[in-house]
Image 1 (cartoon, protein in one colour):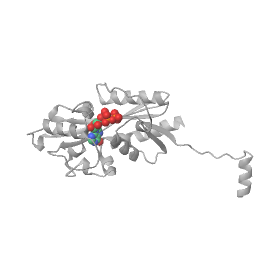
Image 2: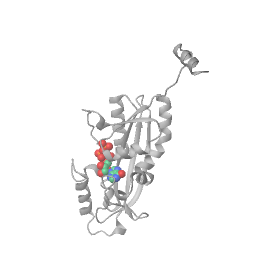
Image 3: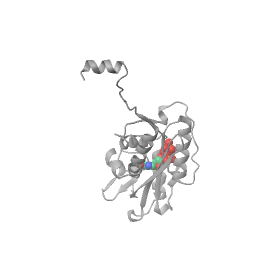
Image 4: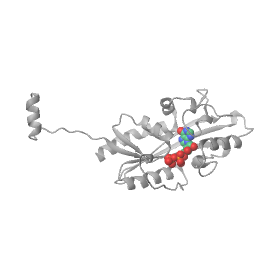
Length: 222
Ligand code: ITT
């Protein structure tokens, strides 16, 4: 068919071009570090990602669940209702063996309700004072919840083992990354480039497990 014929047929409605629109995904977080990592990990899926910080006056939700899973589901359900769109929520934190799993689900507010990363890290260092490196085992944990507007739900998890350093090292990442030593790298998480962090991190693992489900959900929504 010549270009001219094609144009004529298109005009007369004899041919139809199926342009698959990008599916919108709400990433229900205000944490910029998480958003960066999630964007990178979900590249190539043909999604248009929005974070809560892209909108004005979005209501906040109280994270009063007893586990990462409860909180992740609560966030994803709440915002998928508000937006009427496929929504992904991440609830994550640091579990320190010597502190019986603390700060855990309280990681974001370990040093107080609006605590900064620096304040949380300083509190952790104080709590761990005098404990040798061999007894500073910890893990990051991440639970991802995906909820579709018609109520379909999926959950994935990822963990990453390490140790709590004696001091903060590195400027990348966010949260407890400058204190989280990866023994096999001899570096903290805050010294790794984003792609490398995603390859080994709790969040990267949870997101890789979710890619297939995301595709299935996308197939249903589009
Ligand atoms: P949203 O609820 O808006 O997603 P948040 O930061 O409050 O943001 P969480 O309640 O899940 O999220 O708390 C996660 C905290 O755990 C986060 O603030 C960090 O202190 C810590 N954390 C989680 N993942 C981390 C990572 O990859 N590197 C360093 N710290 C991390």
